[in-house]
Image 1 (cartoon, rainbow, N blue to C red):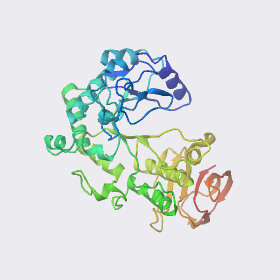
Image 2: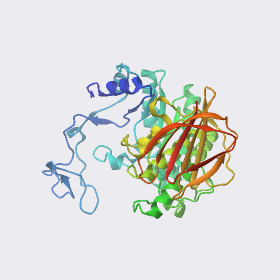
Image 3: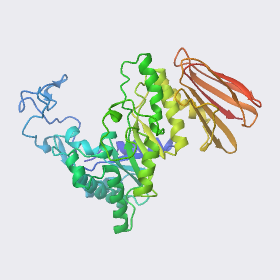
Image 4: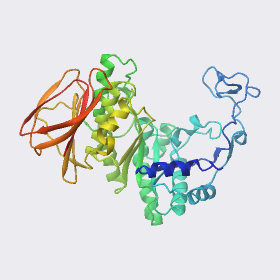
Length: 422
């Protein structure tokens, strides 16, 4: 199945802008044959719960009680076969080669997202087999490409499969991700070739902040602690119902936890967070969560992370990226240790980097009140400065300032500030 060169165009556009490219390689047995076919016509399945408002014959495949219609549809109605031969032909034919390939996307829930062509729940063993098969094909077609997998959708499926706990039990009560890493290490030992370069996971904050009132905003701003803090008990079902065999399992402790699993089961593998989001792209608190998260990723050594999905570049999320990388002035590529006199990580983030001998700093005030402090033990002199946030939410500004020894600084409420040595 050809994508009419769209992948090539996209890869060329992204690499031309100076970014690394990530391309997803399907790993199921079918891919879409066109952009118009549909699996659940009303003429075949008349009692579906909902239909496409623009095509009254196209249903959602679900009955009113939430169960799938039966029998499953013929996959050839919508799909065309897919295999490693076709994958290698596609990858080899790309003019613009990807730097990284993901082996499918959230394949563990295929029986839900692609029930029309993979209705059987995905097991540990099937997922491993598909990753190994298509990772091998990708590296044969593109010897220099790096492979990221399994691109697991959420915290629940880090530890089990769609089959359920019987699948975990059948694998010596070993949680899925550590089992997967150990198996990929064993494959390298057997073949002499590394097939997994990045442990890729998707992470979405689990606390409910949908009310977006003052309490929800405060929760949103402190839940970035789930990325790094072993003492932060997650304010969600994660802590209410731990469902894994991991230590300290009422805390997410995401980045150090994943790094420990890698060190224990497949050293040398990098860590990527292939999807994450702020939970409120249009709210200033979402922008502050993003600015805080980007600093955390640098401090704790995430190798790459990609935001889901495409935020407004002039909105809070776009401004968080602008803060670190706007107009060719970048935050330092090497993290530097910072120390705060008070432990206030719940309301304040401070990150430092250095590049070509120039120090850069980011301050994130997640509090509803201004924060005042002294900046010390950094090079004195002229600094470029920019910020966003404040009472208006999306206001931004840039100028220059001078730092002296023990410079007294006030960061307004709900504001993120960038400084870089000139």
